Structures are given as structure tokens and as C-alpha cells.
Image (cartoon, rainbow over the protein chains, first blue to last red):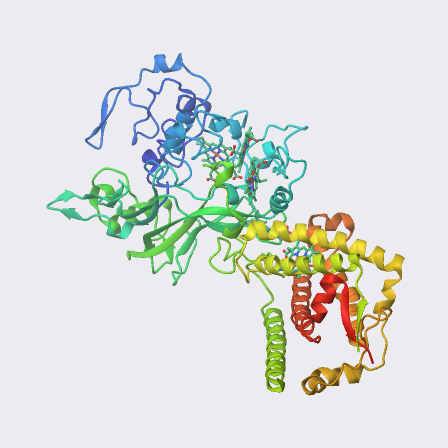
Amino acid sequence: MAVTSNWCRCTSCHAGYGWKDKSFDFAVEKIDCLVCHDTTGTYKKFPTDCGYPPLKDKVFAGKKLFKAVNLAYVAQHVGYSTRESCGKCHFFSGGGDGVKRGDIDSTLIAPPKKIDAHMDAKGLNFTCATCHTTTAHEIDGRHYDTPAPGKRELALPRYEGHLVKCEACHGTRPHRPEKKLFDWRLVKLNDHTDRVACQTCHIPLYARGLPTNTYWDWSTAGRFKDGKPIVKMGPLGRPEYHTKKGTLKWGKNLVPVYRWYNGTYSYLLPGEKVEAGKDPIVLIKPNGSPEDPDSRIFPFKPHFGKQPYDPVNKLMIVPKLFGPKGSGAFWAEFDWKKAAAAGMKAAGLPFSGKVEFVETVYYHALSHMVAPREDALKCAACHVRQGGRLASISGVYLPGRDRHVELDKIGQTLCLIALLFVSIHGVARIIIALKRK
Amino acid sequence: MKQKLYLYTRFERLWHWTQAFLIIFLLLTGFEIHGSLEIFGYEKAYLWHVYAGMALVILTAFAIFWHLTTGAWRHYWPVKEKIPQICYYYLVGIFRGEPHPFEKRPDQKLNPLQRLAYLFLKLVLFPLQFVTAFLLLSYQWWPALGISASFRKVAYYHTAGAFAFLFFLIIHVYLATTGKPWYSHLRGMILGWEEVELR
Ligand code: HEM
């Protein structure tokens, strides 16, 4: 799945006006300011209009009315971005509330402290921009600069405008005793920050607000019942089956997976050959290793799926989803072969005519929904012999999980022999003593 | 004939039993950190292990001072005599009701085998455990201290030391019951006075 050939749907968020195809020129007057700086809440973009808001009342998908936007009113009420204005796109990435990320959804408009210790509406009340500081409209994050800008250290005294790293506000040894002079436990927590990311301990579970999509099987999409599309709701209030999308699985309060991560990813690019094997094809993989001092053990949401694949050319297929009838678009004709041919043509890639479906996975780093301190991970979540959260992390000595197996065997054997020897010796002494009596 | 001897001063007894408690506690918490036991919970096990370890270091510092100033270190000076006889006694003689080949006296409280064992403990095991513990605790400052070691290996040595302590403890506790009657050594270590057979 990719933006190519689906421009007008995807660019309804990926900000600009009239981003219809590859040749979009990113000129200033085509950048949508209002989507971020509207404070009235009435500015909404029409989902399939290439990023334009509706200028007269319009109905989306036959159901939802999008009222005409009064641009003059909105323009007179611009202001700083709010969680709501950022969230208009970011809460809905993946096509619905919380679908894609699992750590950003509409509960962040006014979250309780349990869900987000910083954006807590009754507490710190951070906006997105408190952390995502901007310098000349370049929003701090992984997308303008990769990895995200700023050093992993206290931003004071030499403030360079970057706060997106936790350490920028909290420092590299963030745990300080409040009442006592000294607390060894906090010293030890601080010792972890060179290898374990803050997020790993402070985001114990993701999708704590709304359910997030964990598995997306496109292969079953396109079924109809009596000629009508099917939408079957699951227990979490999200569709289990949707004619346009296929079979979907959802989850709430999920345990992340952990990987070494240096703030960058490797992407499987359209047109890159890939062999389909037993394991899912990794579309987006975090980079990092224990040898790299800038890597940390970081929490991720794995997003699994089943996507179209060309077994002859060994390419992931970029299908055309969105478009009118006759264009080959899947959501108009529900034919994967046509959608694949149209999509691959638009992307300038070869297509053999064969469509198979393969398991895929990509990883999403989690940095939001930082839980309050009392919910941070407990030692034993990681320091256990089996089944710990970091069971698959290599390159560190993790006491309680790791040991020298032979050393343990020798030690145990010698101690057991000693125990056995003194037991026999003792029993013999008792028997002899009883006999003498 | 039996005679009551004052073998262990108040400081020695206090030191001995505090040390015994600390080492057993360090073994329990240490093997919980190691992942072999589950008693206190990881966090408490870790914290209390470190606190107990510090207490043991301080206690040991006092004990070294005491041994040097009172000259009691001489009790640990190794001697060769009678080692084979003592081994024979524990393997055979003890079952035949023979007397212990070594006579306890206030100026030589420890038999040659004990001297060797305790000297090994004091010169090898305690330093090993303390040095590795210091390294484990300070690994954040290794670069600043100019130390280059592998955390993993240091932890292995500390674990090996722990097994050695456990091994020692098993034998030591058992041998403490080999007096006549069986509790006489224990009573001596608690009250200071021990009844000793004179020949
Ligand atoms: C009789 C003395 C001691 C015994 C039997 C003992 C035993 C143990 C054991 C079995 C472990 C687990 C090792 C692992 O799995 O990696 C451990 C860890 C540890 N011990 Fe000790 N220990 C003793 C003395 C000390 C002392 C004096 C200190 C210093 C205050 C200390 C500090 C530590 C620390 C910091 C750890 C955690 C290090 C790690 O990550 O392995 N220990 N100990």
C-alpha cells in the first residue's frame, strides 16, 4: 500500500492543496496553514479532494455531511496549533481513529493523566508543539530530520530549539529523589538510560486510549453479500470485516515489542525485490545495534498484514485503491489484478499479471501516551529468566535473564555434592551414636 | 577431664554472627538477582543485596582493624602439622569415637585445616566478591576510572564467588555440629565459653 496513484485520498492529510500527483510543487500558497492553525474546529478537509476543504456542503461516502467551510471566519480565528488541530490528521492516520499508530488517537484531545502524563488536560496540559518545537515551520520529529533533531541531553543551558527528545527536558539522569538525599533505586534507574530508552519503561502498554489495528488482511477484501458491501463489527467496536479493507484485527492495552533503535528506519522501497518466505516480509525495520552508543532498546507497535505481491517479479504491489470506475481502482471495481496493473503502471514498475498475498509487518516507534510514574515498568518485567519483555534483545548482560549456563551447572553440582556428602556423614554419625547407646 | 575455656571474645562473636546473617542474606538476595529464586521481588532483592553488601564491607573493615590491633590475625597463619590426621579423623576416626587430633587452646583456636580454609576465604573469596561488586556497582564510571572490563565477565566472577560461598557455608555449618556433644561448638560461638577435652 502506498501513496502513489492514490494521491487525492492520502494528501487529504499529507498537507497541501491540490496534491494530485507526483508533480506537486510544494509552493507556499499551496501549503495548508489552516489545518494546523484553525482554532474554531470548523475547518475540515474533504477526505478525497486532494487536500482541499469543501467550499459547499458535500457528502462523503453517502453518509457523512461535510459542511462548507467559512474560510473568512476561520482565517480570522487562527492561532497556535492545539492537540485538536494536529490531531485532525495525526489521530486518524491509517484511515481512522487510532488505526495506525496505537499511541496517538483522539483520546489525546483531553486525556486523563493515566493515559498521558504530559498532555493530561487537568495537569501539565502539553500541546503537541510543547515537545514538537518548531523552527521556521520545521516541526521537530523524525520526518524533517532523521533521526529527530536535538541531542539526548538537557537542552539547557545552550538551548538550540529542540525539545522532542525526552532528555531535552529531563536530562540523561532524570530520576531524582524528592524527599531523601539519596536513593539507590533511582540511581540504578538512571544507570539504565544509556541502553534503555525512556519510552521503554514509561510506555508500558500502547493503545491505552482507543483500539488500534494490529492485523490487516487485504486478501479478503472485495466480498459482497447480496450485492451489498459488508461491514461486520467486532467486540472492540471496530470492523472485523470491511468489503473495502478486508479482514481486520484490533487490540487494546497491548504489550509493545522491543528492538534496538537509533532513530532511523530501513524501508522496503517500491520496486525493491524481496523474497517471500516463512516469516512476514518486513516493510519498515528499525535500525540500531547494541554496539552503537546512540541506539537504545525501544518499544514498537508491530503492524501485521497480508498484502498483494507479484510472485514473478518478486515485488510488493502498489495497488490503485482510490479512483473512479474504469480506472482500475480497487475501491471502484474490486479486482486486485486490475488495481495492481493500474497502480504499478502509475508507479512505473513492472507487473507480471499474477497477484499473490503475503504476510507483512512494519514497526512503529512508540513515543506518546507516557504513563504516570507509578505505571512505569517494574524491574521484573525485564529481569526474569523467561518470558520477560526483553527476552529477544541481545547484546547486553541482563541480570536475572542471562547467566553462564556451565558455571551455574558446575556451581550447583558442587554444592549438591557437598550437601549430599555432609548428609551421609551426618546420618552415619547419628546411626553410630544411637547404636552406642 | 573437661575444662571450660573462654575462646571467643564479645567482638568476635558479634562479628561472626553478623557476618553469618549477612552472607546468608546476600546469598538469598544474590540468587534472586541471578534469577534462581523468587523471595523478595527483584527490586527489593537488588536494593537489599547492595545494602547488605555495603554492611558486610563495613563489618569487614572493622574486623580487619580488630585483627590487626589485637594480633588475632595470627590464628590464621597457616601451619602444616596434623593436616592428614585431621582429614583421617573426619573421614574415619569420628565414626570410631576417636578423639580429635587437635587440641583447642585460647592461643590456637583454629585447627590447621580451619586456618587454611579461613585464610582462603579472607584472602581470595572476600576480595573477589568485594572487587567484583565494586566493579558491578561502578560500571557507569569505568571509562572515567580507566577500567576496561566486560560487565558480563565481572558478573560471572561474582556469581562464581557466590557459589564458592554457598559451598563453604554448607560444609562450615555441618562441621559446626561435629563437637561433643554436637552443639558444643555452636554454644561456644554464642556464649564465648566452650567445654574442651583436656588430655
Ligand atoms: C557473600 C557475599 C556475596 C554473595 C554470596 C553475593 C551473591 C551475588 C549473586 C549470586 C549475584 C547475582 C549475579 C548475577 O546473576 O549476575 C549478585 C549480584 C550482585 N551483587 Fe553480590 N554477593 C555478595 C557480596 C556482594 C557485595 C559485598 C556487594 C557490594 C555491595 C554486592 C553487590 C552486588 C551487585 C551490585 C549485584 C548485581 C550485579 C549484577 O548485575 O550481576 N554483592 N551477588
